[in-house]
Image (cartoon, rainbow, N blue to C red; front, side):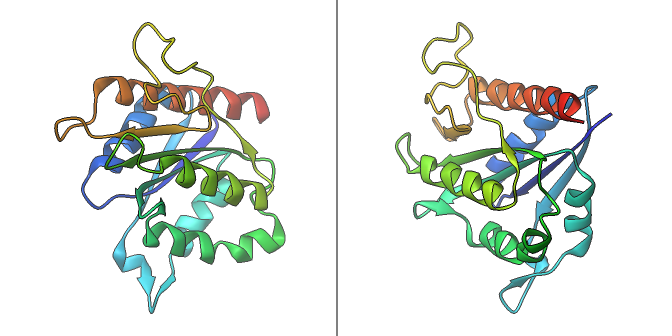
Amino acid sequence: MPLLAIVYFSISGTTEKLAHAVTRGADGMADVALCRITGDDIVSGRFQNERLFETIDRADAVAFGSPTYMGGPAAQFKAFADASSYRWSQQRWADKIAAGFTTGACAGGDQLHTLTYFTILAAQHGMLWCGLDIPGGEDPSGRNRLGSQLGLATHLVDSALPQSDLCTAEYLGQRLAKLAKRNG
């Protein structure tokens, strides 16, 4: 089975819930490695977790996840991305399937910018981007409710993630696992 690495930062637990939903979606179709970025991974402002990087090196697909803070990914995720430059210089992640998910405080909370950041990071690494193929507002079960084709964008409603967003995250996990299997 292909290996899906889910690389994410979460401070309040919301992004972590999305990461676990992506995992559920890939269950049975891919082995999944949850790669949570923590504050302990950052030493003097620099991300340092070689085991996490080695997991991504072995993966067939990677899902990037971060809350959207001040119009972009969290600083902790950005520290991880900056530290990936050694892998970039060797194109170690080339041809892996990549996708992204994010959450923000508001429906129009600039989540698209975070997803765009993820796509540029993936493109720099030579990865192949996997967006959502669910037309926003057209799905009978309400998946992709914010209509982001680039990846999963969500926000809390009444202090909770809507079930439709968790279903969208599961679908993203399924889609990544299928594409990783096909690409392998």
